[in-house]
Amino acid sequence: MEYVTLSNNVVMPKLGFGVFQIPKDICEECVLNAIQIGYRHIDTAQSYFNEEEVGNAIAKCGIPRTELFITTKVWIDNYGYDKTKSSIETSLIKLKTDYIDLVLLHQPFGDTYDAYRALQDLYKEGKIKAIGVSNFAPDRLADMVGFNEIPPHVNQVEVNPLHQQVKAQENMIKRSVQMQAWAPFGEGKNNMFQNPVLTEIGNQYHKSVAQVILRWLMQRDVVALAKSIHIERMKENFDIFDFELSQDDMNKIAQLDTNTSLFFNHQTPETVDWFLNLIQDRKNKI
Ligand code: NAP
Image (cartoon, rainbow, N blue to C red; front, side, top):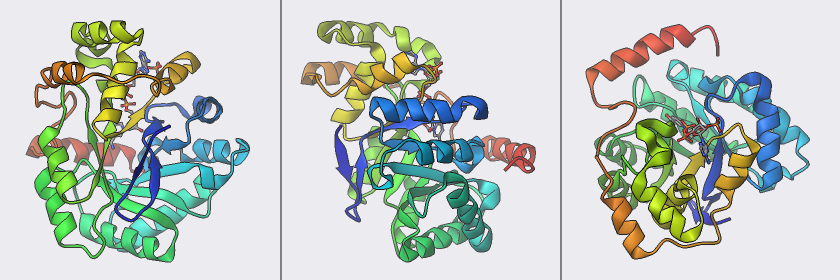
């Protein structure tokens, strides 16, 4: 495993296991399998509806809590100082842990400032070891860094070979914010796993497209969160620490960038409307 050190000296495994869209009934088993394979960094969220199952795996896995790195994210509907604090107390109970390694504000909409102040206070109390944001564009991130007592340690954004976020990463490095990549495979959109450039690069090292993508992120110093419900793919995605992409490979991958999200552009009013509808849908589920 490789690691990054956050601006507050917290050490984070560079490869994490994401549990978005893993159904409740198989999530505990998937996380146990991932931990068995060697993953120590698990990424969940209040809005994934599987914190409890992640917590069951944490409790049962037999690995000391201090060796695990657990992230959750506060859902927009839980923003606001008191609501955020109480939602994190609920997350602590569901995750069956005394502290959470990293808590992020999931989306850059709504009452982010009061929510962030709650994260800061829980951080000072030691209940959260690092705090941050997710899906914050460069201007919003600069604002959060500039106008808060404790700047975000992390910003989790979509990063994959078709949406590389080079400028966004430069902005994060400048502000000592660690970039994390969600959907490193773009969930397979645009035939990512069949991409000819990535396939050819992988063939040189006897590695798959998924392994090339994760290796590329490691070499860009981006923390990658990969999701799979299949043990063989979990193993494949973990087997990326025995090869190095050449500068020529890195340059070829750089050329795949389209500067366009495969999912949403967080900076349009339509996206805000979409999230408002989603909040309504999810209101009773959290
Ligand atoms: P992803 O990791 O890019 O892609 C997951 C998809 O790829 C799944 O359909 C999986 O299928 C497939 N896959 C995984 N490994 C594979 C392999 N080696 N070969 C072929 N197919 C493979 O997408 P994601 O789950 O959306 O993102 C990863 C994590 O990022 C999430 O789980 C979550 O923790 C985080 N995330 C955060 C946000 C945010 O807003 N902060 C948004 C999205 C995601 P199977 O499961 O069937 O194997």
